[in-house]
Image (tube, rainbow over the protein chains, first blue to last red):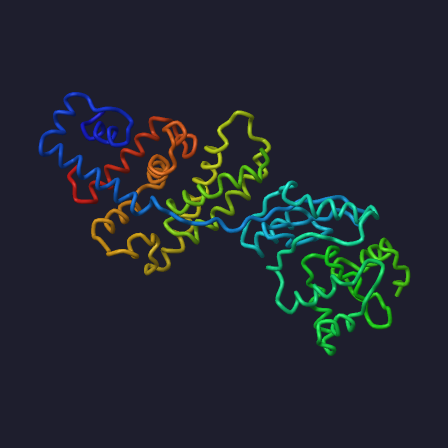
Length: 226
Length: 159
């Protein structure tokens, strides 16, 4: 059953106009007080909950493509490429991004198409280097220096961990370089597969040495047969 | 529309909704992530012409209700945690009336709080509120009215 109070609320919420009896009641002291209190309630509510200025965390996007080394997954943010991975499920990739970026990634071919196209071209032999903006948020400052130096090694060539250590001005840092490359969040695009152990030995590869070999062969490096 | 566009369009309002339901931004941010993770695989199966916004709010409502239950369990172990901290009160001159109102909002049943927020701040009709919270138009309206009556009572008004 509709009470006077219901009609009063309906009026304040613009749901319905009050009936003539309620309009008369609103003109009495009790009615006026009720009206004033509901107005205060609504305005207090607006003060407390109206102006909520939360900014969503930066979004992350991902997609995948089929390549000669299997499915490759890529993730971007609005800043650029943030992660490349392979030999795993989309679910585990998305879970990792959620964990490391604090944001649930969204599958979005439109947001990842630049890097996806470049990767497709790379695996088809139509491209030798990548040109996409990079989001370094998963990377420490030292690691970034290592990865930027590594990105200078062109396709078809290789460098040693020691070479990279020299390039970043830490000639005794080969081991740290190896570690940093082992945690390269953007393999293939940042070509850590072009960095070999001393004496031309293949060295390790987080994605598996077989894939390292395959990538080098694709780029025309045949000497890597340690 | 792709899911990415859909998510981009609605993420800010869903986040604000979750802040209004959960009372703080940190929990709302977490819940917001879960909402879109959950929504994505189901998005393609949405029937064309269905109200995708209300559908998303429904996921958000359920998520907030779950988050609240979880938090209540945690809070039971630590009575000193203030669960409903919004800056509006603490920032300005603390006013008894706003404090009382905030306490009353916190004490509202979750569905009443949800319906009230949707009506006041998310520009929803009662039919849309029903689609977002559950129940029908009648219960949606009743939830909003009940909530307002309780809040008004908390300001010291008579029932």
